[in-house]
Structure formats: C-alpha cells, structure tokens
Amino acid sequence: QVQLVESGGGLVQAGGSLRLSCAASGSIRSIAVTGWHRQAPGKQRELVATMSSSGNTMYADSVKGRFTVSRDNAKNTVNLQMNSLKPEDTAVYYCGVRTWSSRVVDYWGQGTQVTVSS
Image 1: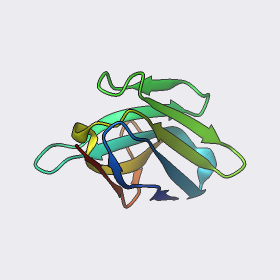
Image 2: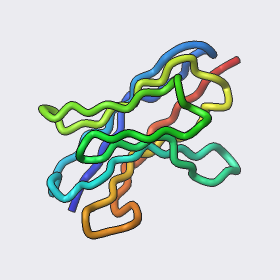
Image 3: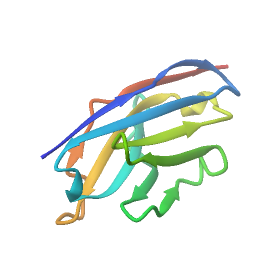
Image 4: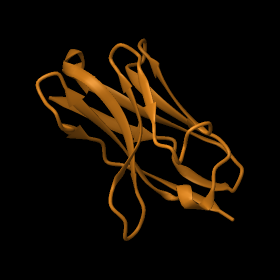
C-alpha cells in the first residue's frame, strides 16, 4: 500500500508560479513511476508529467518548458514546479503512482485545486 498526500495548490494570477508536492508513505520501494495528473471541470483527467524511479521525466506538450518535476528523496516527495501559469492550467491536480507490478496507476492522492485567474 502507498499513501499519497498532495499540497501546494491555490489561487494565482496568470503568469505566476506554484509548487505542488506529493508526499508518499507506505511501500515506497514499490513505486516505479510517480505522475502528476489534472482534471478540469467537464474534462477527462489528463497526464501532466511523470518521473520514474530512475529519474527519467516526461511532460505533456501543453506544459513543456513551463512545468518541472523533481524528487526529494529525503522527504519522499515528488514536486511539480509550475511557472508561467495560464488560465487553462486551472484544474484539480492529482498525484498518482504506478508500482512495479502494474501497468496502470495503482494509488491516487486526494487532489489539490489550482486556479489561475486571467
């Protein structure tokens, strides 16, 4: 079992920045990939960025060059630094992890709201 807790969401003006954190606990060694996803009202949940256990990262085209995912091993957190935010980035952001034995996200956090005003 893996428990995930997101933090760092809030309200920011367009062009501003926010930093989200995903704190993992439990069977941390079972985590193969940690991903940040988001879901805007009326839309499907979409993948924003991922970081593998080996440190490889992937970004959705819509956030490339603006968002950066990083990991703090001492705190067991995966962070998402979001710069140059746009109103279309407004969504609930979720942290999800895939374990070594799975091909899909096994565990989700509760989500954190990010609102970007124009």
